[in-house]
Image 1 (spheres, rainbow, N blue to C red):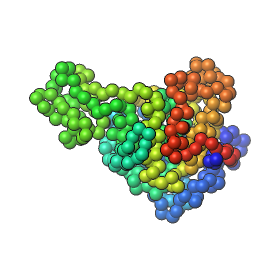
Image 2: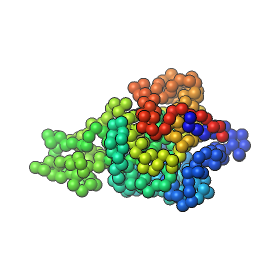
Image 3: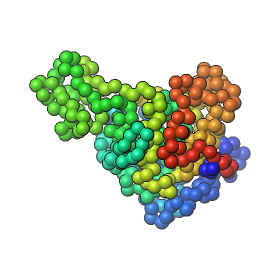
Image 4: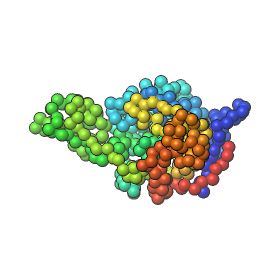
Length: 377
């Protein structure tokens, strides 16, 4: 069984602060044996969307930074730009403004912040993978320079795959724009020539040379060059540029596992560590509520922090802790009748998604295992 370290959220004195418990988790886990002096340690976390109010608080990230530095590592906070180039988190510059509004600055965190896929989300490399659906994944360039990867996730539900935890945080969270696009859409955008008015605005916003050109007065998209930044779709006023979103939950979950496998292979399974923060557990992703985001009442009371070198065991333990907790009156859990401890809250909220498919897919790829042993801190 994989070990999952767990610290509950209850505190009666300073020594029981979640920050102190987080330090004890790190010191008592495998992480001190993973980090060597001078290692470049990438700490991946989501810094929240523009109007979300429930996201991973930077004070926890700072504590991880301090512990990594004490172990001799060089901590660097990493994130990637959002799916669409024109969204509030679509470029590093715009995401930085959101991050600052949430307290994510180098001064607060005690470490530099870099956008691993570059200013526009186009700085990437292609990682080969023997996946269940994919053979190649477009990952953020900076990942290739990591000696150690630490994933810090605000654990919650997710509208596409059911669960947003350790696996999702690195799979989607460390993909470039093209990687994110191919997860969400079946193919590159296409132009409907009959609807197109030849205004040329899509060419003006396209950030990739050669991806869009005018042919016989109409824009033509080169799918092999297009990075899937969605700028053309967002700009077209007559909706002539279109792409079909993926809608099969199982397909998405298999792809998610493939993407996580590529990340793990790039860094090395022996050089990763993960923590899920089961605090203010929302039923949707920190950015899934909409392009500017928003936050709902948490589903369950605060539970605590879980951590492991095995992201699959970690997510499984986190799921069972949330499902084992009582729902909060007036929350989404209450709305769907999932208030009692032991009720599968994620299945009740997303009845068409079986979160276990992600766990099974990850096990098939050797990312981790669902069986675990809790080590109470």
